[in-house]
Length: 267
Length: 197
Image (cartoon, rainbow over all chains, first blue to last red; front, side, top):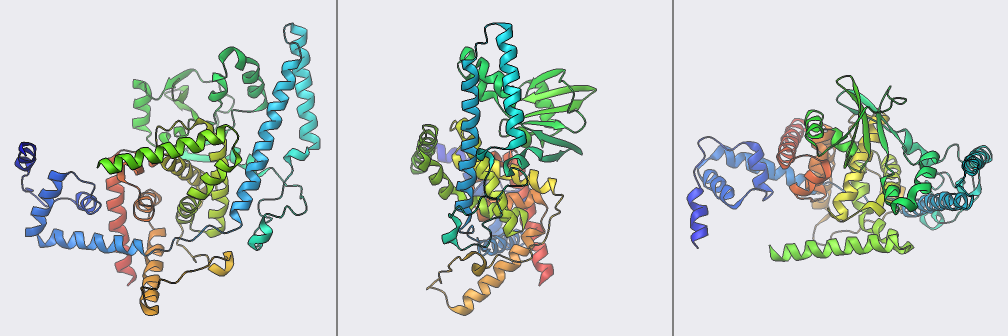
């Protein structure tokens, strides 16, 4: 009871009209109890603000009438197929990693032999292709009735693995273009695999994409900065959109004050 | 408030359970994740890209990313906001890569095209349904003309029903920014609808 009185005590009428942000948030029940009561008191006496709230309400009501189309019925089959391909590809890398562990790496000669073997194997895979990389073209099922969508059909050699399209994504932040690169390339994978026993697999979890500012692809970062550090926070405050690139755990390599920096979570 | 907390905790348990099952090789788990979120992801991609076919491609790519990174989901946020975050980032990246400007929505995909079935609302007459559909189309066209940052916030709030806190998490901005983007988006939409009348 006494707490309610204290809340009510804090209610003061607005000196001016509440701004539209507040009125819109009030409509969404996204303001505090005290704030809501102050707004309601103001609305009782202000025709202009009542009208604004009414207009917002009409827009929200209209948005409620916007159609929400269902995903096409064949999409589930297509996603399932692509996911199966991705899983198969993942297990191929796993097998390759395990096979390499069999090669004795204690001696320098063994290490060199392992690397040569890996390079040879990769060259063979890249030049000839393997059944694991083959699959129906993502567009193959377009327009097919849903019953046929799950039918594998004739296997078509894709012009490029559709998953690799993801690697070439670019994004613009503060007028700069960032190119996404896969960190789990073969060399890194082998490195991670070879050292995973020592780190208890923790390093495998560190495999992330890297967003590299255009033109810095061949640069080594001069400093690694944690986004939670004061310098990292300052950078994020200055370039807020960097947060989007870092959101899924990816790293960002960028030029800042004549220095090439790598920005990451938990550097 | 207590009920809401219990519901949130239950959803989080369900999320973690699904992810754990996926981690231990249960192939059904990813299917369940897909069917739980495919509508939301597809709608978001559709409203951000303005094109049905492109939305289908984006949805496929988004779920591939979800499949790839789901092992790293630790339950610090809900699976819904985590997937939405991937979806928004992926749509932004792809739409920027293709240099697609904000385009007015040309046409909603038809049911015949995708073989979807429309279930009539028995509580509303044909005229009322026609008026509602017409208004929906006008608002959708206005929505597609909004700047991307406002559109994202308005879609997540008014079409997907996320709270301001969840939207802030998805977009990686402060709640104040979410509040501002939603209000400004709605204001612009109102002006656009008045102009089109």
